[in-house]
Image (tube, rainbow over the protein chains, first blue to last red):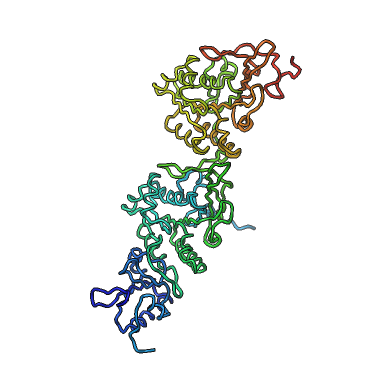
Length: 103
Length: 498
């Protein structure tokens, strides 16, 4: 059992990725999001929230920095600021085990 | 041949945004320049958040300019509670969408930073809040907390802060950013943000001066515009917020009236060619027991008898004592108070700071609306303040009295019984219009009391030294003392008198 929460819909853990428009940092974070989901063999949901489009979501969550990958389902929320390029570090921080076969 | 340019030159005067701190707005020619960024630096507890909130409050309540409060330190709820005592109904402003909060205060979360990031999230929230509130003013309080939040990425925070400041300027907002200082007279702010984001720099201080707290506000820099230099004192008052004490040097345009009012003593009126001027300040100086309080009592009673309202602020004697004294000279203070013609306020000088005394007197005058005011005595106030503070106080007080066209009378106590000067006398003599000296005069047979009108601006007056007596109906001026020894100052009298 991982430390991450389970979403009600399909039993997969669910995170949120806050970005602010199409910045280079946001593009890197979005690419890394796909790598992250792949590394968990699809058993992870990451909702993308563009703060420029939904600023009230960021206000509610109290997001200052972007990109931020956040587990808002637990209290206090766990947050990782940055473009999540180091997958191993991201996995370790959220307590996931790698599920794909590569490497 | 020169070309004639018919186009008016671009107006070099920047539009001003009033902060609601009146005397401060005077310092900066009407307010903070619109569309610019002002850094307000101060040590913890110097009043930064109060000033910032007042800036927003004034816009919302007086000028219909909505605002945004970006808070990095306290939560919006804490600010709401803390500012309520100043009479600011933050909840209501929120409900009617005149004030929007961006809550960037520290929240309970586990957080690490891995890789590159920016503060676009914060900027997006701020812009969203500003646009939905149609804000004209915005406060960021305090930016120091943001640096502390991203302690390992100081260069990044600087870069992002500059970006935020630029974006806010682009929106036409007038920006007030508070920043913490480590010491009252050290570098301007901890992260030197003033160097890269500020058009203007204002410093708030809460310094210890002779064991007393003295709050001041100073304008350090105003890009492209003028300002008055130097620190001016301020105080924090409930239901009002920050109230700065104006320096009268800014407003020396009091009209000088020619209307006379009675001194309350017919013989003294005769000596002064018809009494004091309506908008003038008279100093009564003398040793203890020479009759200063008596002269003040005459002055007040004379006003009341002429249908005026009179205010007495006593710093040396209790109400009971003052009333007893008055009764012994045939003046009924109680009846005058009952009729609403007199107000007597007594308190210890030590009860509050000098700026607070000044503001209290101003408030009393606004409330009661007296035509004459007596302060007994200034010397008592002098002992609670450093010299510069006392001079500032006197300047502000005398200019206020004149501006309100009140006849003022202040007493000062000499330290030595016979002759001598009080320090307040030195300070105030150039600021007052008239000076009356009361002295003990030693003669061969007995000790007499003498009175002399030393100076009376804009009027002729009796320059003789007059002996006087005190009885159940007050002061009675008698014969001139022709052979008084030289006790009224070096230039007066005959030093060879026996």
